[in-house]
Each structure stands twice: as C-alpha cells, then as structure tokens.
Amino acid sequence: MPLLTRRNLLKASAVAGAYGAGIGIAGKFGFAEATPEPQVLAALKTEAMLSEAGPTREVMSWGHDGMPPILRMTKGRPYAARLKNELDEPTTIHWHGLRIDNRMDGVPFMTQPYVYTGDSFDYAFTPPDAGTFWYHPHCNTLTQMGHGMTGVIVVEDPSDPEFDAEVVLNLRDWRLGGDGQFIAPFRPRDAAKSGTYGTVRTANWHQEPQYDAPAGGLVRLRIAVTDVTRIFSLKMEGADATVIAIDGNPVPKRFSLDLLQIGPGQRLDLAVRMPDSEGAVATLEDIRGTAPKTIASLRASGQSLKRDIGDLGPLVENPVPKADLSAAEQIPLVLSATAENAAVESICGTLGYSFWAINKVPWPGDTPDPTAPLAELKLGKSYIFNLENTTPHAHPIHLHGMSFTVISSSAREVMPLVSDTYLIQPDEKVQLAFVADNRGDWLLHCHIIEHQKTGMTSYVRVS
Image 1 (cartoon, helix red, strand yellow):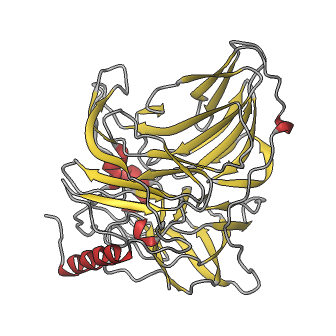
Image 2: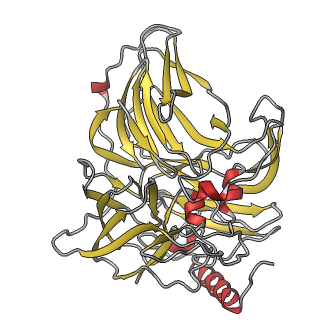
Image 3: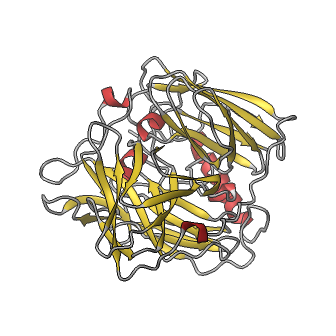
C-alpha cells in the first residue's frame, strides 16, 4: 500500500501554500507579471499505432492527438500551461533543461504537490534561454514516460539565424510484445546494469519516418532523446550535418557530425545542408550496437536553393552565469553501485529495488525523506562538481534548475559546453562548474530512469 506520511502531507500543504502566495511575483526566475492564457495539457490514456501489430492500448500522452505536442515558447516572453490530470494516478510536469522558478519544476513533494486524478495545476514562467528542451512527468516516471509522456519544447529567439526548414525529432523506445501491447517496463537484472531497452524504436512515434526538405537548403534538425534507457551514437549519411547546439546551448565551436553519443535527457541541434538533387535522401543513423539503425530521413524536394553552411549566422549565447573557478568550492559526486535492498514504498511508484548510489547513498524514493541534501549551496556562489563514475556503465547525469559548464575530463578532450545533462562514461572523472543562481531544492539524477528509480538520485539546496 502506498506510504502516505504525516511529514509528506505537511510538505504538500507547505508547497501548495508557497505556490498560492507566490503568484504574480516577478524575478530572475519568477512568474511573469502578465501571465498569458494557459495552454491546456490534458494527461490521459489513449491508443496509438506504434507497430504493425495494431493499435497499442494504455498509451499515455497530453491530449488526444497522439504524440505530446511540441510546445513552442519565445525566449524572455511569459508562458503558461494548465495540467489537467485525466489519468487514474497522480502526475506532474517537469520542464527539462529550463532554468525556471523552483515552484514550477514539477517534482512532487519537493517543489509542488502531486496533481491527483481530476485535479489541475497551473505552471507559469518566462524561459530565460533559447534552444531545444523537453517535458515529462516526475511521478511514476518509468511507467508514465515509458507509455508515452515525453514531449519536446522549442524555445525560439527572434535573432536566431534563418533556416529553410525545421524538423523536430522526439526519439524514444516502446516496450511492446508481439501483439503490440505493453510488456513489463523493466527487468531487475538489466536495471542493475545498463537498463532495459525497448522493443520498438521510434522517431515522433513512427518507425524510420521520412520528411521532405528543400533541396540544397539548410535544415535545423532538433533532436531530443526522451527515451528512458537508450544511448545513441549518431551520424548522418547523404548530407553534411554540423552540430550547432547541445542541450539547448550553442556549442563553443561548430563541428561536423561524424559521430556523437547522446543519452536520455540530452538534445542536439544540427544544421543539415540538404543534397542538391531532388529525391536524394539524407539519413540519420544510430550506429551504437552491431548494425546501423535508421532513425529518420530527409528527402530533398524541389530545385536546389544552393545554400552554404557558411551563410549561417551564430546562435546567441544564453545568459548563463560563468563560474569563478578561482573561488569555486569543490563538491565530490561519486556514482557507484550499492548493496541491493528493498526500496521504500512510494505513493508515486517504486521499482522495489536499490542498485545504485550517489556518494554511497541510494535514494530510490520520490521525496527527499529521509535523505539530506547532497550539498547546501549559497546563492550566487561558484561551485565545481567533481563527478566520478566508478561503474562499468554510462550515466546521463541531469541537474534541475541550473546549467553547468564542462571544464575537464579524465577520458577525453572536452569543449567548455554549457549544459544541464552530462553523459559520463565508465571510469571517467569530469569537472562541471556552475553558479548557484536559482533558489530551492534541485534534483540531481541519472536520466536512465531505472537507475534514477533504484538509487542514483540526490538533490542540492540553494539558499
């Protein structure tokens, strides 16, 4: 039976009170003074054609139109959404990668109450950064995300360079049996390793979709890995592709997509120069594994526009504060396996196991009880995460509410990329520098959801 403690109830009341008292407050990450009419996102169950076996039942989404909508926002302009929960279980929305007010972060009992069946919750914020982001629940995450609740966010900047087309790809797996219906979301033996992979791979809920794009044109290809497990090794065949942004932030120096590995939670923006010949096809492939796998393709259409990648102007940097490395405080962050023990029962779902830990502490629950913050941070101060992976598996580590800059790695040369999710390799040590510029309790966790839900989670407190 779900554990509902007095402490949890008190925390829910406190969060709800703080939210109600805060409406209308403006600030760096605060609410907009003039909140627009909210976009309604109805969490519900539906059906979808995900395989040739026929409609898949018990799919979860926001709205009746299949895949969750691409949410379009503008940097520096207010946005509002109203979550209406029509599921038969609690849910929330987390705005992955957006540096917004803590009360809007969507983590139950840490930043807001659960949104129960039949209830609603209003989110209102002004995105400070442009780029590609995404949204998902932070409640019963393996099931809700695994059943479809992952959508892409595009935050536009009016000063962005002009492309001839834009294609957005939502990359995710589904764990379906031969009849096209959902099977068990995970296997414990896999959760204790690299995670349990899906059986059907899709881009935008379709297998190997193809999109038309202007021949000889420049296409902005926005890619979000919203899967709960899969790590991709991406390359482009049939066209030149240039990496222009990673995890919502412009790269310090653009480079060709020869091969790039990105994991769950990460995003990639490419400038693709389409072939000149009508009908020619450019193919995005995942070459991780024994054989290349087509993800999606672009077909050249019409007469060549004869664009040149050199025509493309720079992306504007996002206003992420730069850490003072000379004064930064060092914080150890060691990822490890842990002795197996039963997970604490949670009202918002548990996998029943504890396999992973951060700094030797496994946190498999959905609330901070009884775990203390990994670190207490002072607002405005600079810090460095000394992140060390002592496991034989890669982990995409995601920090809520703030962005960091990659400054060094023991495994490879790194560029000073600004990000919110770092895919750390086995035995790698990396330094991530950031300014604690956003008040509140902020989750820090592996975005392979089985790892998150079996212990590889913690949080920091900024005050």
